[in-house]
Image (cartoon, rainbow, N blue to C red; front, side, top):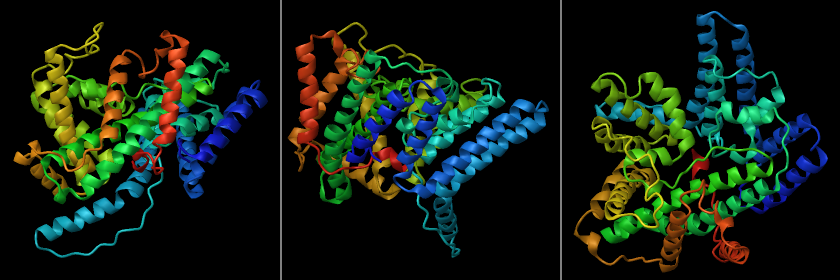
Length: 477
């Protein structure tokens, strides 16, 4: 069920009314409703995959209970690895089985040995990468005694399957989201209004910016051999805003909807294209995933402590794993490795924590140095996005070769003026609103007539420029 679909616009009010007006006085019933609603929401694509999320939930709930009773370190570690192996095993089979088989065959072919191996027609369950990491965070935190294991099965099932963020995040930590299911929620009008505002902004980003950028980015990437460098650069630029507005738009909608039901989710994007270096970019892009890798992989490996060799190893591990998480294709692994190369000089020079403040803090406009830093960071990020979007490694290298030559300065064969205009307007709104959790958070500081005019304009644009309904990009991850 897509957030921007008619089915969801029918589904959401029904759940809202039942949640507050029928079961509002009973916390257990509210949590149970969330579980049922989440399973309906998830099963709308394919009800058969409900068995996976239910099985994963029961496994980690049970292991959490066992960890609370076990005091012998070796047995506790055995239970932890049971959870990790089961969850990663499911993820590995559905997402990576064919990749490993094909890579295995290709490696032997490269050395002149012909072997045959069968791949399977495997359907990737929507959201498996997200809820797998979410439930793993619970088991790991219980093992590390950062969280008391829950005895409330319904609350735990609701935590794992919470429908607003189930299929594309944010990847919530058990320490943040699970306790919110233990306490009675109160309907707060101001919070709900803020949620509506964030949903409107998220839908605008998805429907007006991302989907319309996608139309031209797809044309250019799918026919890249037919275009000169300037058009290819435009295609990469449009894809950069497609993926940002698509994914951050989903996060805004998920966070906003959660506010309707009295929940607070973590911020997942913090205006990453205003970053002044690649380290700042990764602190602002897909925050829930990057902090998950930081806390559960990077820091346990030693982080930025230890010898120079270990620092370099840890950086490459974290970025390569991040690339592999995104998809079973060498393009994603190279994308991760390229970002590691971008990050490494900052780490070695001990400048990876330089830009931790907000760009142009308390100023309307950035200075020349900040503009240059943001442009350079955006450009190298854009180059990496080519690998993310390309159909193959060969396609990505060919695309970059054809883009970065003298034809880069020619007139593009395709110039979607309307789309580019809205991208520029979008950038301006994001810049003005960069002090908030999302661009429109502080819009209530302007007078009501202007505020309502902006809301109406955004909604009208969604109806006018609502093209072909497209699934969110991160559904495939």
